[in-house]
Length: 255
Image (cartoon, rainbow, N blue to C red; front, top):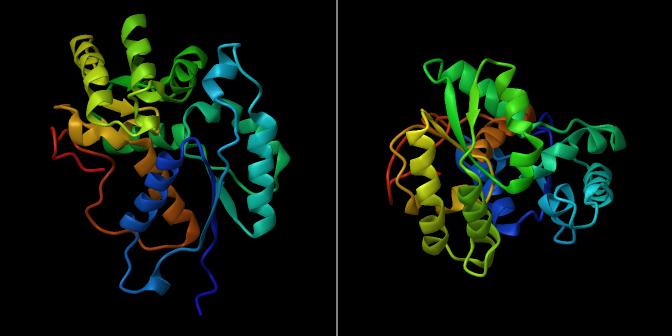
């Protein structure tokens, strides 16, 4: 029996399909010829975590106690390190780290590192995300440190992205094509503003990539986080899985 692999713990439920997407990405990017080649992984799909953007915008309860509860459970259950498929929740990452004794990988920091290492030709990136991420500017913090510029869409397009994520016909409600129609104009605006790559800065956005037309490299933090997790857990990386969807268009983008 393999004993040197580390167990991955996922603080999930933000939302459930995004959590599943991260798990699938870990499985897909792991080089394996049998069950035993895959990595041990524990998911706490805590759907009771209050909305992160609502708290940041001053209209909802504090999610930090719930995030800490999930992290501690995963540590108790045997996780060796933690990952969290929610960009907005990374605003609270230091609070969570202080509450546990195992590492919690910063998805946004890892994404900035990967862009710097693998896309030196790209200096300006457009961000598709939640209002909470835009307000806290957490992407700016880690990308600006590496000389990378983050471009936001205007206020109306930001609200349209939120509607695409949270609306009655949004991604969290299971609607993909309808959500993509709200996001596509924001993509165009970001490209017109000089973005040379697009960051899927909400873990819901990769779920609609098949319905978006994006002719530039797409930086997918979910996929980057999965790759980092495989490395830390002692798994083998599948060849050719790349950094993220590489500028492919509708129905052809790599998740």
